[in-house]
Structure formats: structure tokens, C-alpha cells
Length: 311
Image (cartoon, rainbow, N blue to C red; front, side, top):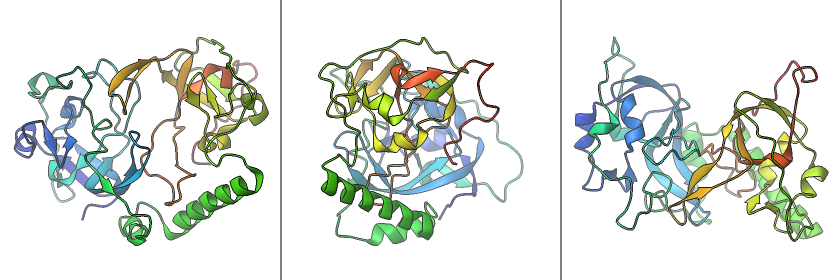
């Protein structure tokens, strides 16, 4: 079993190709053209996945024989420049243990060699994220074995898993006592406001306070359809660097491209799924930030320390 810290080599494209079906998938999970440039590379396993969230039904589901490698994310170049930046899912069959091997194998694979379509017959996009509902299986709520699998796979330590379960439980208790959502903050707007800061990659911003953000969302916690979730609350008041703008992204339920305005992704600010009563989510999706939730920090006033998603 490959575990976090193991060094692996991504197999040559010719080897990976033999593992794929006529749609370019293994166990219903596509190998994407954006992944081909890593063929022949030696990389370190960052996480072994035994479960993951998916955004079609919003469920936590079982996944097998799947790893994350370092922080490799999709750049969307083969999917009309989708900017979500999803972490790649790597099937173990696409990798081999490289801990005892010497030397780097040069890779020459190019996405131009990729023979499978990235769009369905109706024009819908096909990627790992859109197909995740089909590449996973239901995870029965009454089956606690997923907790043991998480620990054996070193996805979570027993302490971190316990804390995540406790936090999700407390969110639900608070919801029952106060009537507040355990997933979203609640506002009062019927029509939510917009603000353009024209932020650029590398700029520093500070996330506004909860009260300021609450003034920008509706009763479902959304600003123009984008939710501010409880997972985003720990970042309020902290300073981060803009990673990039988010102008377009594939929406998993529809498999169509969604155009956005005044929205950015912040560096190293990822979702931990703290509301999920399964012990969090290991998928590491980026949070999406409306510019109205942020304040630009000038070089003269910014702190010397930048907020860390791990602190």
C-alpha cells in the first residue's frame, strides 16, 4: 500500500494508456490530458484517499486505490482554461514505487497525444471532478469502518479525526439550539451587493469580519449565488495573498462552464469540510472569494506575516 511520504514514479503514457477504457477512464475516473506532463516524473505521495466529497450531489463517498501527489492541481488547459484548480486524483495503477530506483526518467508525453475527448457528445465537459460521482460509491452513514480506513491510510491522525467529528457535531447542536445553519452564515439581503476590486495575483488582501460579510449575503448565505460557508469563518480577519482570479469554472452538476465576476482564489486557503459529520473532507478544494468579502492591504500597512491555512 502506497502511503503519504512514499516516492512514486508516474508511469509512461504508453503504460497508462493500457489501463484505460474506451472513454479514457479507469474505474470510471478519467486520466486527463493535463496530467500527461507528469508521466515519468518522480513525486511524493501527499495523501491516500479512502473517501472524498463530490459536488454533483454534495455527498461524501467511497473511493479506492487513489492518491494525491504533492500539491499537483489541474491548470484547465485542456478544458477551456477552467480555473478551479482541482487536485489531481491518481489511481495506483498509474504509478509505481520509485523509492528504490535511481535517476529521473525523462518524460516526453504531450497532451497533443491524448486520444480521448474532453467534451461529451452534447458539449458537456468531462473531467475528474464531473465524473467523481460515477467514480465513487455510496458511503453508508451507519458503517464506521471509514474511520479505521482513514487512520490506516494516514489521511488523518486519530486526534485530528476526533476533533473533526466533534466540531461537526457541535455545529449541529448549535444549529438545533439557535436555528442557525450549520453550513452557511445567514444574511438578510434579498438582492445581494457586488464590489469590484480588480485584484491581481500576488496582491495582499484581508478577509473581512463575519458581521461585514453577513451584510453582503442573503438568507441562504449566498452572494449572487456563491455561498460563504462555515469552513471559511476561520479566515476572517486574516491576511492572504491572491493566487489568481476566478473568471470561469466547470460546474459539476451541469458539466457546463460558468462565468464569474469579482471572484478570486487565495493562496493556500483550502476547504477542510468541517461541517461534514464524517470527520471532515480530505479533498482540499480551494475556497472561492467574492471581492466584496475582502479588503486590499497596501504594502505600507500590511503585516510582515501572511495568514497560513494551517495555523
